[in-house]
Structures are given as structure tokens and as C-alpha cells.
Length: 356
Image (cartoon, rainbow, N blue to C red; front, side, top):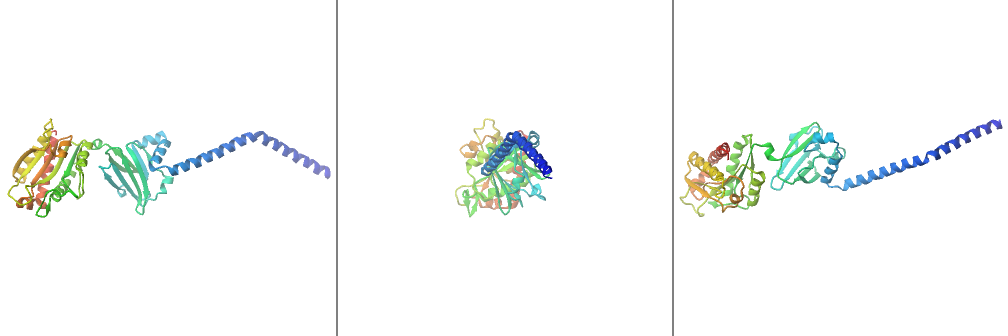
């Protein structure tokens, strides 16, 4: 009995010795693997810590480096943002400030923690900065670009793709329309009527006519009573490399009502191509003919900032005199404003057809 127990004990001791010997034999390999796993874990923790400290743009750059070539080809020049179940592309609210080169996107009913699972990925071309915040409304994504771009937003599967395009890649012709004055710059004031308000109403009446022209994109310096610096108006037209630049104003002689009335159009006399004068001539002839306004002539306008600095055919239309009571009443009429707007539209399209 004791012999049997001894034999078993000796056998188990032998097995244990073999096991210990084997473990000692492979211990260096186990140690190396264990150290590698520990190092990998530490590296992952450190990388995660660094990501937490990254800005939204740094994260976009980080993920841009991580995506594979096939995914890069599918994304091309877009950035991809996850859209929660039930959200449509038309639900995404977008606000573009062409002056500040900012694009603000709001994804309703979307929480910021969705980015842990579905980070924003894609191209950083033209993106100078990016901010991502959350509110009760949803997820806010703000892009600051290095130049004036046109955002194109579309949905595919569960993702929203935002592409930043040069406007000339999207539209055949580009026009800039300026409603003169605005905000703290009322322009001429006569009988309690401000020039800035009439200018704005005419431009608002023009917009539906221009919106119907699918091959022509119109950018407006303002569509509300806000202040826009003269430098920004000209800069917008020049940055866009617009085909035509038209500014709407009203004229005045003094501040009291008088008998002077009619339409004048100012142009760039320094434009060696003469296209600015041709554009102004088309506007003047069409307006005076169609709305029966008195022709007050074409006027060189190089002393005016937006005319002097514009790098394309430019015309500043003085539609009428607010210091003429009869003309002021017409300019305040929605019907007359629409008539003027229709002529402005037709004149722009005529100028484009004539190769301006």
C-alpha cells in the first residue's frame, strides 16, 4: 500500500518537475509576450488619452490617416458624418457665411457620444478648423475653410457626406447682387423713407426670378437689414470670380423733395474691356424702356469703392430718386419693385448671352 502511494507520489513529482522544466524553458517567450501585451495596452491607453486631448480637426486628421485606401477612394473629397436612424438629409440644417468662410451643420436628435462609435472621417482639404459641440437641439459641426467654397450635402445609407466645392465646378455662371447700404448704413433718408429698405425689397423681388435660372448661381451680399462692409461686398465678388456684379441703389438730390427723377447707372471707366459699360448700358436702356423711367445717363463710377475694386464687369444701378415724391411712392410699391426686378433679371440674362 505504502509502495503504491510512494510510486504515485514519485510519478506526480516527476510530472511536476517536467512541467516546471517546460515552463522554465518557455518562460522567456511567455515573458516577452506578456511584456508586449502590457506595452500594447499602455500604448493604446496613451493613444486614447491623446485623442481625448485632440481638437475636432486633429481628430479628423487622425482618422484620415487611419482609413484604408479603398475607403479613401469612396470618400474622395468628402467628410462623412453618421446620421442617426430616421434622420434625412433635408433634416440637416446648414448655415453658410461666405464672408467668414464658415459652414455650420446641425444634426437634430444626435448626441456627441455617437462619435465614439462612428467618428467623423474624410478629407481635410480646404478645412482650416473644425468644431464639434452638442446641445439640446443635436450635434453641431462647424467648419472653417481656407477659401470660399460651396458645401454639397447628400445622404448615403446611414451617413451624411459633405463635399466642399469650388462654385465654378457646380455652376455655369456666377452673379453677385448687392443690395446697397443696410444695417447702420441707411443710405439716403427722405420723408422717413430709407434707401436701404427699398434696395433690399427690390433685391428680394429679384431673387425668385434668378432662382429659376438653373445654370446661374446668384450670391447676395445681404438678404436682410444687416450691415455689410464695402470691402466685404467687393471681396465676395472677387473671391467668387463672378461673371457679373450688380449693386442696387437709390438716388437723391439733397434731402427735401424736388423735381429731379429718373434712372442712372454707374460703371467702371477703367475697365479696358468696356464690358462694365456695356453691362451698365443694357441695364439703363431696359429699365428706362420697361418701367418708363427718365434716362439720366451712364456715369463713370471709379470713385466708388465697389466699382473701383471689382475685377469683373460691374454696374451700380440708381433706380430712382427718393427725393422725388412721385418716384418715391412708386419705389415703395411692391408692384413697381417687382417690375424693376423683372427688368434686372432680363438684363442680367441678356448680358450673359452677349458674352459678358
